[in-house]
Image 1 (cartoon, rainbow, N blue to C red):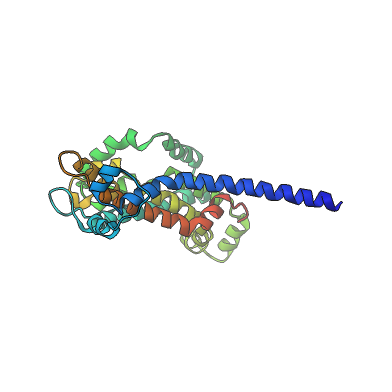
Image 2: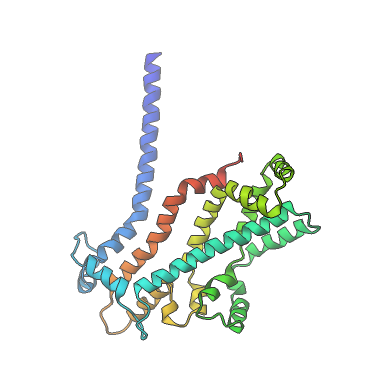
Length: 291
């Protein structure tokens, strides 16, 4: 009996070793490109051109960081890394907060108001998931242009703020709220607005966190829409600005690999920080069933 227990525990331990080996190998596979990019930010551009990525770490990290954050590219001198980082942050936060507010309000109306065509309205909203941004980008641009929203934060955020994804998840969440809670709030005299603000919003904090991660990363990584809606260099986002720098690298000038890769690393940090900070709420928001 004792030998059987020992052999069984050994099998379990070897299974754990195999699992961790696979996880570590997968993590290294994903991290190697980032480590290569990080290494090129520490060497001079000439060394990168001559020798390519190396194992040696240079002393150009802080000079490349200063150039990435404070040196402007283009003709106006306005699109520094700092200004592009601020624009990307405004776009990401505006997307996330706007889509959460609109999605929650739409889901609240669909679930708790006695609308005759509520189900039809939900499925019409849901079918918009089948239409990617590229399909509706030209009419959206035309509307934004006629309203004078080009080169504005309003034009960057508002035309794409409606979210079928957020509406769907919040609708499913609200439908799981017990009817007894709704009746108790009604007996206490809570109106629709008070019930929404004081009860549903606090109950939905895990779902809000999950949606915030998804929508922030979606807004932060937007490239096509900011490219169309912004023509002034002072309104460029990081993703848009990095593309412009890589275009400037073409020609007879020495390519600024250190600066471009530093901006790429800076563009990665805010989404990673948001995911790490909200990861526990993110998992609970998408998997929790007992409300």
